Amino acid sequence: MISIRLALDWTPNINHLGFFVAREKGWYRARGLRVELLDPAADNYQVTPAKKVELGQADFALCPLESIISYRTKPQPFALQAVAAILQEDLSAIAVRADAGIESPRDLDGRTYASYGARYEDGIVRQMVRNAGGRGELVIEYPDKLGIWETLIQDRCAATWVFLNWEGVEAQQGQVPLRYFKMRDYAIPYSYSPVIAAAEGQISNKRDPYRAFLAATWEGYRYAAQEPAAALELLAPFLPPRDRQIDLQQCLTQSLAAFGTYLNWGRMAEGEVAVFLDWIHVQGLEALRLSPAEVMTNELLPSS
Image (cartoon, rainbow, N blue to C red; front, side, top):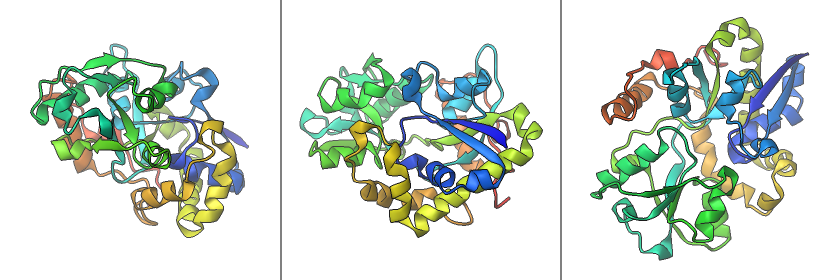
């Protein structure tokens, strides 16, 4: 058995469905893989998923594409590369409480934004505010990552970044009306999130087990589309206690189209990635202009 470790980007949730299905159905093991899914709650997110790959603590990381840009351009660069996209469309948004009097991102000037502390995050959100007609003058705070959602629900911040197919469902269930601002509605060509990322040097060294991992994962997401109730039963036991009451069926309903099809699961469009790379450079958020070939590859995907 070959050991594979995947560092999750959050506590287990609907975006991770295919991994848990593939593991619990034995599809990784059938391909000679012993797969460990690393929950960030184990160290309270002290080490990010991408950093775990750099340190050799994980083979793969789930992270937004901009984490790969950040790692390839930091003072001591690390060649991280996306090998698959979990979602074919952006299901994230900036969320605010509907009772906060915030009708547009421009109303966030002078208000508190709870940030995850990612390198480009604050700049992206400030630019959204400017694109909506504001000044981009946010008050940025950095709560514990795994507690950020509660800061919004408890009205201790004005806004934060969420996934509509998870926190959005939870808010609806909890009857906390929220308003959402999506990146593309404000001329920000936000790219794939999350992606499965690996060290570029390991992609060639471990091509066969990495391809096997992605093939089994692909089967997991296919099964979720074909047998949704059974798939959700496999995920449910691994949710953290605070998420056990979430409406998983509603989460999946909002996710299925974005998970992609039999033919395009995991694939990333070079043109779309190029637009985001150019945008982040032109906005002055990143001095270097990277090419899509540096940050992504579709070569390991089952349909390639």
